[in-house]
Length: 616
Image (tube, rainbow, N blue to C red; front, side):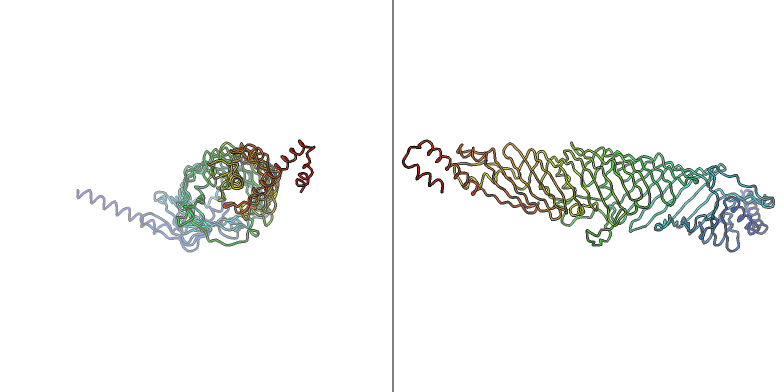
């Protein structure tokens, strides 16, 4: 045992002595210039190392450098700068006077991907799509040293990213490791977070890189990507998920392509492909599909109910609210002016504001702010909708034009989605042409106009029973007839048709006709969308539900009774002229009866007096 311990001590002394000898015999500053020239020869980038290089022997044989930067040819700012750099070297090659770097470690580095850090060589030719062979090193450079790197590590660093004149995006707390092999293949692991506009995005990524044709082209297989998004206007529990994709970049065409894209967000999953041609005016192409997409879960939207109107836990973390005039709202889609794009989206089941939409298809093309919606269609319950049109977002306000074709959509669900009272429900259909400014419900209620044919099946006018109102009013005026004893708290109309015209937030209804087994109606009126007011002038015939005097009932069945319905949607009032109409009807009946009596007794002496009375 003593002999073994003695051997180990001797071995340890030899190793320490050898490392100490290397530190004294090999000066790392001897190959400083070699590294600078080698980097420039292979990539064209300028490597700057300020201060002397020094050895660090424990726990890893390393070379420590001071402030270090890497700058592209002609760039105004370095691509990478760090306060210090550590090169972990392999011990065995040092014995043969070779520098083999196991790892380059940059801590508190700043990576700039901005216009100032880009290569700038006026008149330089475009790089070919195939790699240009690296020129052989000068004999004096290869004579003493071999420079190679196996691994690159970046710790607690910052990425500054900017395209053109766009705002800068700061990616903080970057921790990255990249291992490469002799075939220019590399494995990348990175984690970081992005904070912007009171939102925080934390992510991790694992990828396999193919750098055989770098810098002209490279490809990546992103096998694992996880993220979590939280902050202002994000659900309290946040949005999190994972993904995977194949990515490639071609320098001569400045094109990025994504294939086999799979991304989850909470319980949602999106798949498809994407490509982008970058440059001064980027062009994006997206082709996406999803079996399920719940936008309410991603945005934290909740319906307005009596229970949620009081104190409750907010679904989202709200950003500060800035009061604005609706007519002076900023153009929220102005960024579409900066690029071209096309989107093909198919969703089997979409949830938006509580609405369940099946088989959604969206095909849209953007040309620097001119947006065309060739297809925007889907199913809701047993109904369908199609909303093709176009948008212009190049001005201060969004200009919208739509040609809606809606068939048998439940109107009550749409009203609930936008927090409006369910004053009228039923199977709604519309064919029309509308246009306006803005996309919000407030914009639609004030700044849209258009016209169309409206119809409803199985319509319920909630909160008021027209048949009951008329029958009760008639019963109060005459004891000869009565109405039904049991009533519902709504008016049911089996079919309803009207011509609608929207202007300045007011929907004008003309040629309105409604029919049900007990009631027929016709008339016109207006609906004020902004103030949620209604004013309808109707002529009603109650054709069923009577009992009593058959002659009076037959008269009532053919009599139009004026009815005005007006006031707020949630609490409508009415004016009913039953007494006047009933009096006129009874008077007309009496006149007819007297006239018949006179006609039958033309030779009677009292006919002249009766006729004078009738004429009065």
